[in-house]
Amino acid sequence: MRRPSPAPRPQSLASDGSYLWMGSIETERIYAIDPVHWTVREEIPAPGKPWGITCVGSELRVICGETDEDHRIVRRYVPGHGFKSHDGIPCPDDTGSQLSFDGRRLYVSQWYNKRIVALAEDGSAETIATVPHGICGQVFVDDGFYLVTTDDEESDDYWLTRVVPNGGAAHVEDLVRIGFPARALAFDGERFWTNHRERHEIVAFAKPG
Image (cartoon, rainbow, N blue to C red):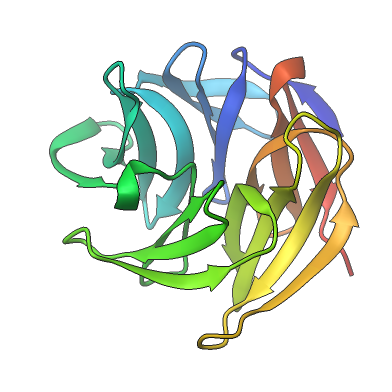
């Protein structure tokens, strides 16, 4: 299922079970989308380009690319109150494009380093898994990560990849070919959602298996 994005170049996505939260790198704003009626319920300017979003309880964490140098900082957003400026966490190595949360820890994915990194509140980082592809979407479901991956971002060869951490030897499996240059990954309990950014569309598809 494809839907028109409420803003051009949708980059980041998260689901809190009621709304899809989308970040546009064109408008540098966050949108709360009602997925049933496909209406925008909330729209907020971000402190930078919103590269990645995840839900943390009733709040959001957003990777923002800030300043002309695109410094990557994880910002806290509280719906109805706005972004908090005092407790941002710099991304490890000043890089990171997607976020997920497993109920305890935040995880940043590094596209070109092909790594999933656990991020502590003090900014310290631990590599959880290294994967064979670049990572351009990430969500934690059940006991592992689902990723959007590619070896060539200029192609249509994109995959839904499953990663189950197991100490130093994660189990990595490419599940299905996505077939377009996807950005971000969210799961609403039934379906995955991703962005076809350059077509300004948001796409839903069934969980494999």
